[in-house]
Length: 155
Image 1: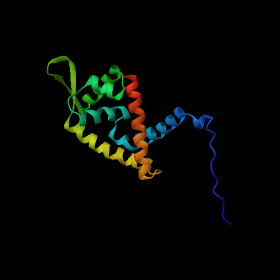
Image 2: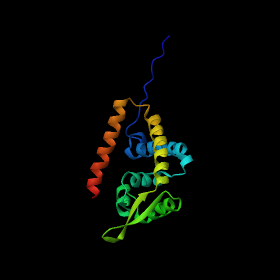
Image 3: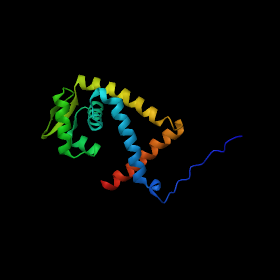
Image 4: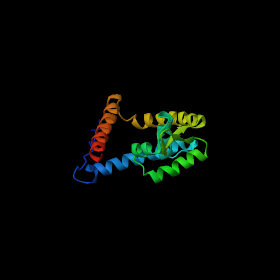
């Protein structure tokens, strides 16, 4: 006797229908898996984000990094201090602007970034495997569209 597939009915008027709840739960899954996958690199998600930006965009100022990642400048300073103390990044003067500090990933920082990035890509592929390739592309497109629309509002 064939079993009928039981469709899960979700009450969209309850907690399962809330955008914030679903985003937070999805974020917690991604964050926890990220931490498990990259713990060998000893980079927090925020430090990895900062290292990624400065490895991909050498010379970006601290203010630009803070703005791009939505991190308070004071919080960014401690992340940069840690990366610098570990020999992964360095600050350098910005020509023509004595108040700004440009950030550069050191060769060690670039190597750690590349190793960590490979693990992050593997972690994301595993998490997104529940979606078809077309759904994965659509999901990322929708997230970027949502983010871009609300970044413009806040600017």
